[in-house]
Image 1 (tube, rainbow, N blue to C red):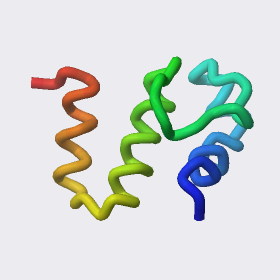
Image 2: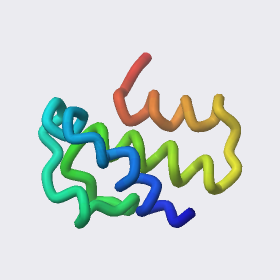
Image 3: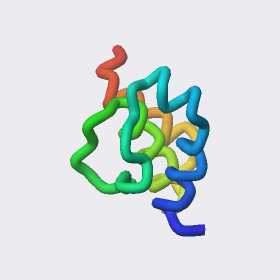
Image 4: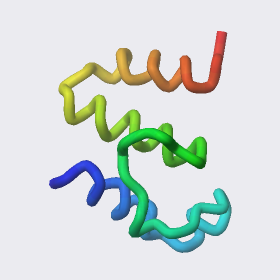
Length: 69
């Protein structure tokens, strides 16, 4: 499945979009720039999983997004 379709499928949940103030789901892509932190994190997971990175490598990338020490 296309990366963008995966993102849109996840964000098809109206409650999730309302909670995180995500609008215009159909226009979202897994490419930067991101206007919402949740969209950025989901995009990193989708893209890096598609690039066959391990879970721990993906976790490190997400950790860097949040500047977690």
